[in-house]
Image: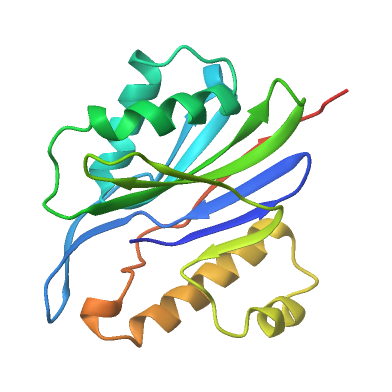
Length: 195
């Protein structure tokens, strides 16, 4: 897994992810490398953030670039829901591979939308639309008080503070229960003016 914290409103998405990639064993998280967990797809008017098996996000990028004819987020997720998991190269023995969050503009409604796609081996993807507000995976204990204490900071600083707290909470768990948060904090912003 990894960290994902996003501030979502009707004309702006601010998405923070960590960059740590690891493999899990019973006693510890073994570092593999560091990578971006958010990709921007301007031709589809969206960006995608991933949690889980890192290679799934890479393959989604290739899928969106080469196999999808879409001009917006709505068309992209509709096609990906039907076709993406069947186009995955065999990358894992696990059934639950990844969760992708797709943030973008829907040309039909002229509005920003967010979708959560659960990717599983050789099964149709599960798709759910996400409400605006603050999205944080894994959950952050006592988030309201943390936000209150940092009410005078801008959204970028808030997301960085929240991720540091999220990492602190994650580090207290047993290795096999941890998300494995680390590396740098990468922040991606998407702004839309519907006028």
